[in-house]
Length: 244
Image 1 (cartoon, rainbow, N blue to C red):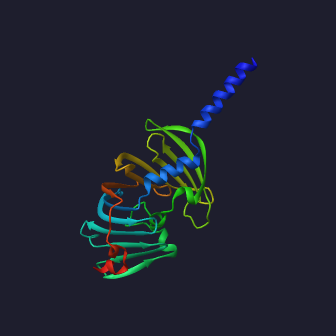
Image 2 (cartoon, rainbow, N blue to C red):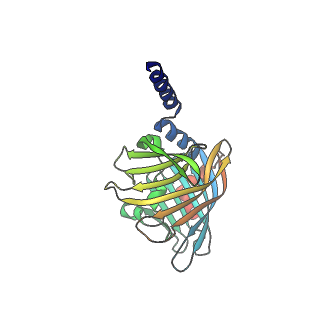
Image 3 (cartoon, helix red, strand yellow):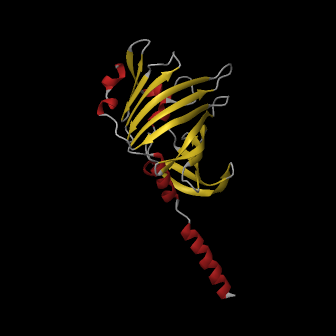
C-alpha cells in the first residue's frame, strides 16, 4: 500500500513539475505579443445602434514606449494621426490643423466612438513586469485548451488593477481577457481569434473589444497585414511628423 501511495505521489509531482508556472506562461505570452518593431495595416469596425463604421489605419511601433498611427479612411477620419512617446499622447486633426495632447481624464474617452479608450492604447507594459500572476484553472475556449490566469497589478497607475487572462496552451497567445477596476467591477472584455504565425511568433489577428458598461457588439480590431522586427525610420516617432 505504501508503495502504491509513493507511486501516486511521484506521478502527481512529475505532472505538476511538467506544467509551466504562471510566470513562465505570461513571459511566453509577452514574447509573442511584443516585438522590437512592428508595422501593421488594420481595420477597426465600430458596431453602432443604427450603422457600423470601418476605419482603416497604418501603424508603426518601437518597443513599449513609441507608436505612431495614421488613419487612411473613411474621408472623415483620413489624415488623423496619433503619436505616443512614453506616457504622452498627441493627436493631429486635419480638419482643425491642430495638435492636441491627450492627458488626464481625456485618456478615458473613447477612440473615435469605439469601445477602445486612449488609455487602452497607452497600456503597453509587458504583463510579466506589471502584474503578479497565478493559474486559477484550465478551461476550453472555443474548443481550444487554455489556462485561466489571474493577474493583479503591481502598480497603482495601471488602468486595469485585475485581469483574468485565458492563454492558449498550444500557441501561448491570449484567447480572452476580462479587465477589472480596483473596485472589482468588470470594465471591459477582449476576445482574441484568427491566430496566425508571423515569423517565429504567433499573433491573434482579430480582437473584439467590448465595454462592459455599454450595450452593443463592441469593436473589432482586425490586423490585415503585419511586419515584425523590421527597420523603421527615426523621423516616424517625431512630433514634427504629425503635420506632414
